[in-house]
Length: 449
Image: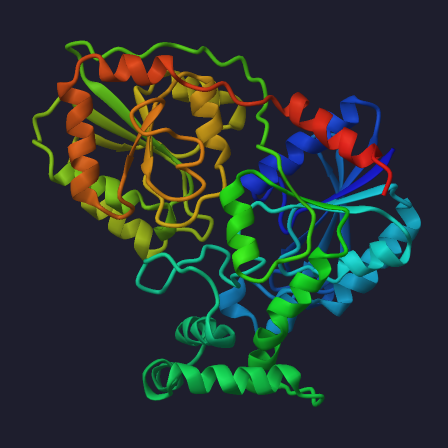
């Protein structure tokens, strides 16, 4: 079969969870004899001639076609419609479909590409599937987080809360202040509803507001055109349906992971020190600051170490600087940089527990599955996507999201309850392999419509 996969960014410049999943799926399908290409995007960097063009390359034997778009990330978008409906990409995507003639298209992300790329598949009679790897489809910021770091349940009042959030990030301070504090939420909702229904096409800030007002309806309509929508947990489906994605055919299909030869080692709480790890992007919603604050609440002489693996995709941001400042005088905490994905089993083997202190609705992070494969207990925020795979007191421990005090108490349990690490490690649930995951996808692809 000829199979086309999408991701909104891809290797080698980006290597987050979605990109790793798409790479793994592409290679697994290629091993089965399928012809696979990946269509992705990337913001053009100071090269106006490349904007709107396709750049073709190969990575890890995977053919990649990259659309260079003008928008960087959402905070820098000048036209919000392009964040979910990019006419230039849709044009290129139609040409790619005509040239490659895929028998299946499997979308993994379309942020800053176009959700309307699904239309091109329908017009050509190509079955289209989608895997929801985050909540971008109901949240322009993808993380369902409010500006103060608290979780958001989704758009309310016609998306008035989204308008306030985006104004605080993208508009001048005076205008953001008016939107957030000077105008009632209900009034903003009424204005958005009127803009969304208007037959007139606005530009500038009014155009952005109109695009926001129409966003949910445009995306929900495309979901109903898909052959099937795969979600890693029931929580993901619930969040999408609760926020207007209705009428789609969902299937809960947990992610698979690469078989790197994990050593499923049973951890023991001996008289030595306990080594905790954090593996992920150094971004506020990943919650590393909560772990560092929890460490500050524990005795400095305690037998515990923290190893931090990761970086910020945005460089040395103020948040990263603050993290390093917090840890500067704590010899128990080490920033260890990044590592090749193939070394993940070795990194996990050297940890007694993995800490995932996320503040947002996680969507089955791949590192959590790898930790389970390695028999490494997980200490995680009690939030959807994590609590779906971690049973408190069985194969991990959960704590209230954002609560450094509760996390500190959880860590103390590991130090004081000598059999706890062993029990949690012994109960680790082996996740599906990427080959098993690809088996299921292949079966779905071959099902008649």
